[in-house]
Length: 249
Length: 356
Image 1 (cartoon, each protein chain N blue to C red):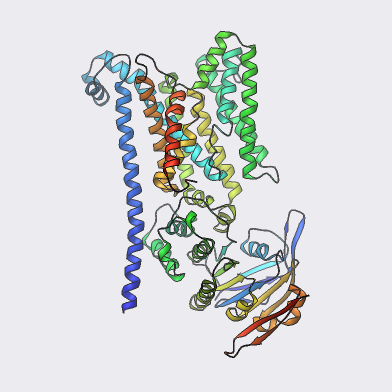
Image 2 (image 1 turned 90 degrees about the vertical axis):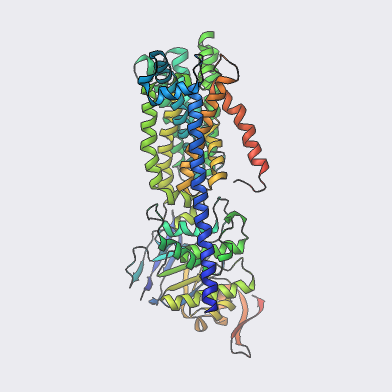
């Protein structure tokens, strides 16, 4: 099974140091990890560093995979105006680095990704016509179709309605377990993190704050220090952890 | 069980959609190719010496069966011009398509990036003052000057674009600045040149296929044949570039390296094309837009689609240039602009959806 371990990982853009000293215990496949932190904490930078798009200090160790490209990354959504259908845009994510000839198996993988995310109905639509939420689901399909061992998703739920947010996070949890895949999701909704993720990695100002099982990491102290809010976590009558925010600090 | 059947049906429908999309695009490419062959035949049939279409086709297929005069007119005079229209049209259109793709800008083309203007300046130096940037046979001084200035322009744009902090929007602005610089230099040349030289410069900048000869055709074709497979090799990566740098990068594409490589290739392609026939500004802009509307932006169809559209526009332009004023061949650059731009506006305005 795939394992990702970060050891004192740093990253810089030019001379500007963006990340320093990010360390995690070995994060194993089959689970969902929340990457938490306020705006401009360095979450996207950490993803780019893990993917190898940025150089920096420290060590990103990926073991237990035979794939030459074990990590797939879905960046934050930006609008596109390409004349491509959803089906084609997912196919081209699958075909990168492959020959121009599309095999039957490639089409099957595209359809599997679209089906997993329940967006088969969008297949024939032009990507330029999609709403922000639909684009995010297509973005997730583009990452998933690469059959990665590690899936990095940068705020995949930011433009989704509540129903779709819950759907997507549940699907990611199921896929992580079924495919023994490690899914890391940058997310701002702490309530969703508590409910849908197994572990949480918290960063702030480009530095490491905490990493461990989500219920142990998301505490009133962490919320006060990192997010500057007075908040607490309580279980509801159904036993689900809920975030109750009282005020900004 | 019901669930299985439902899933399989949906799957079948999506697969069917994709297959029909591919089939439709192949059909469109086939249609363009057929139109191109018809246009080529008509182009060959037209000229001051009046031969029937049948006679011309026979001269093409069985040169031994026709008189020497027909054979010489068709093979030595009309054929290089007609084929040059195809090669130059395809080259300029491919160059425009890839410039638009890698710079994410619908206005990018050899013309708007200043490459054609650079070529025009190089040609004007030779035409007005007899300046040869590199000593060459007299027939080749003008195209060689044009080619060198076109390449120099694109290398200047590359060099500036490699500076830190230069975005793709800046590259297009640099190109537009190049156009203005070369236009000013051209005005300066025309101010100092003789009246006869000014006329030659103006004629060159109008673009004309009549300068085509077999050796020039082979050279242009050779560049096209080398560049196209190199571009096709990056088909998936180039398609991904249209999703934006961040997305392309996340899919494993290296946007900076790819952009540089493709810019060099398309500069070569457009420099070669304009060097021999002069400034034909409209093909590189409109050919790709029409191809995009017809076959989308999957490079497996967009690349051949752009080539065929560009070749067809220039070939039809060549036909029109001979029939508008019987007995006079109007410079092709004027025709393509006059006929093509209204057609382009019609295409844009008649579509409900934005084409870019």
